Each structure stands twice: as C-alpha cells, then as structure tokens.
Image (cartoon, rainbow, N blue to C red):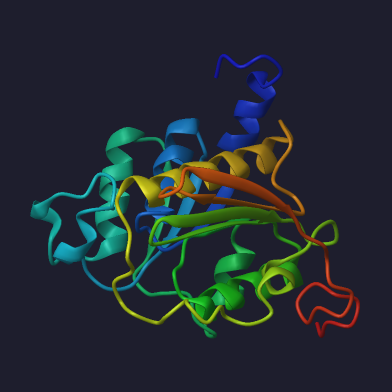
Length: 237
C-alpha cells in the first residue's frame, strides 16, 4: 500500500493476521472483501444458511448463480478469486453459545457484521473475555454506525447498548439499500486494518453514526461502564 507511514511492516502484520468475520452479508461480506484486498492472510467466515434472493440487493460479489448455495462457501470462493494466497476457513453456522469461544480463540481480531443482538452480545462478551479487539458495525434502514472495542482500553458493545434497542427486530430480512451496508462494511474493514497494524487512530470510545436519508453524520463519545458485565471490573471470567 502506497500510504506514507504504513510500509512493509504494516503489510506483513496484515499478512500474519487471522480475522474472524461473523456473517458475510452486506456489512460483513464487504468487510471481508476489503480485508482480502488489503492483504490479510487468514479469514474465518462464520455464516449459516444458504444464499436467497433477498440478499442480492446488498451482498457484494454475489450473483443469481449463487442462489441456494451455502453462504460461507460462496464467499470463500469469491474471495479466493481476488487473492488465491489468502487462507479462508468456512464455518457453515452462525455464532452461537457452543462455537463462540473456539472461533474467537482462533482469531487475532473479530469483525462483527451480525444483525441480531443476541449473536452480537455473544461475540462481544467472548472477545472481551479473551482480550481480542472487536470492530463492529450495523445498518438498519438508512441509519448506520460503527465502532471499535479494545479490551481494557475502551467501552464495549454492552456499554453502548446494555439492552437491545426497541426498534431492532429479529426479522430475517433487514431494511437496507445496498450502498448503506457497504459503507459500514468498508469502515469496519479500515478499523480492523488500523488495529492490526497500529497505523492510524481507530474509533476507540467513539460511535460513528450516519443517516443517509438526511446526509448527517455524528461522532458520539462513549465511555466504558465500570460495572459492565462484559468489560467492567466485576465481570466474570
């Protein structure tokens, strides 16, 4: 990368890194694509189910020919076409209570592109417990946000959202127009690159929020909650 200050050292750090990407949809898939293009050496893609028509409006690289095929495997093939040297591990299931500890332990950093808060809380809690940075982002309608959580140094997801927001439903298809999730996914890929290489300032203790309908953006300062069950001093190990 011809970026002043990044250099060969930064590129080698990316090459030696393993990133867990939870869900390879509009957010996570875009993040994974950008991480491969940046030179990350190993990705673990966790996504259950198969490609359905509803995904085509926002999933980068996916075509109608991929309908009915396992999501994680399709993305592994597409990403391998971008960089044949990248190592990709596919997990054909969503993050859950049984697999989260093992998957997080195999990664240097976690990218959270999951839509459901139950799943996101699992990843957040385990990443904080194991001391793994987590870059998260989400899109709902025309609103999106992103942040980076670094254990011991910043707030975490539970500090920002102690409970699932009321407007956030458990519907299988979320309202979104393709470019929105792509913006979020690109942002958290950049966040992951910053954390892995030490280049630039990540969104630590900052929640970046944007509204594409009104073309407004805000940077909200967030604080680590002392008694947070995930990252606070009283959390259980």
